[in-house]
Length: 483
Image (cartoon, rainbow, N blue to C red; front, side):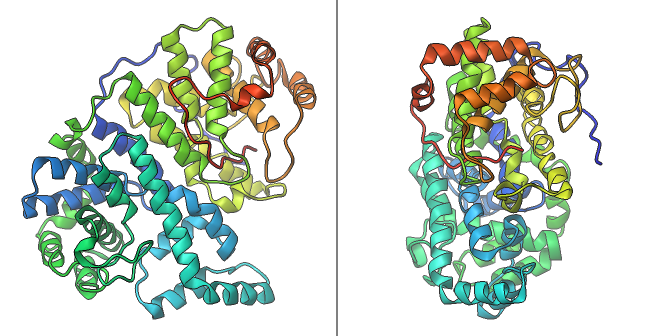
């Protein structure tokens, strides 16, 4: 059994709402690490892509506004990446994280066929594997188009919800277009592909190859794909940057992230005020909830229940808002869990459950990168802890769990029971309360549970679950699996 060490001391979290001033680049740069998880990429992939792309922007002499839009395109290029994870698992019978990581090194028919052989139903029985491979090969173009269209359109839509310009949204939407028209989802050619998309795709390939094989391998890969995947006029600009003597050392420098966050572009677009923080949290809840199709709107419902409990307990509007924001992001670590686990219809094996228990740890790592979110990270990471110390991932007990942690745990459990799951149907309210009654005092806090019951009774269950959150309606997406 794996034992985790809590990243915070008893009673440390939740004592005061953070007051730190945030820069947009710092906030989105930290959240980009969650996107790296979903793509199966080494930590810092989007940040490194941003640094690479901005070196190219300097060589091209782009105007300040264009540099700003490119900066956010690069950081947020993978906003839609969670939306096709479940479909990849279903179609290819494989781990979506490993599949996505390996796919980024593939180009050409021969490599593509080898990739499909290695990554399609590899653990299945021989007949099942052959049947799956036959289906994938017969529909390869159609499947690829479906997966990329879902990812690109979803990412562009979320970028718009985060108030980014149409140029940023289009850059994300066209990330997988190729210079010769062989890309997806629109088959655009040449200069019809937005410049930001051309740069972002090349930066992505540069980082993947440079990280795995070195700078010269990255430069040669770009040159090999010039005129097919990549703009032939941009390739020499990229390779000149890549072949600088200290390129790889700079790319791997621990101070690179701080350098990226310190650029003037972090001050552009919008001031990070309370309203904008709420919008970013809501938008990222859509990224989180798109990971798995078996329930929908989990993060938003947990946020709603958290807010209702806070109302019953007399939280100030400011504190309630802070808690709702944390609830929207509480499952961000699930972006790093394979859909073979999240969507499994039966009981998890011990090994799978160990991996599942990592999602609060991964979420804490992402949110704690944002200085002003560190207390919020502690609260969000504790949503599977229990008063008796038998929860996960840290095994915290009543002496360590703040009221805020207890509130979020009750909200999460209530939605886990009342929503559809891959392994069972949604439970009616009476059955849900019967289960939670048995947990009260040992697993969940009685006062927070009573506050939830009072709030549900006052809101007219179940119609209240369809009500929008304060601050505007947001699309409810496919959601999570909670153990």
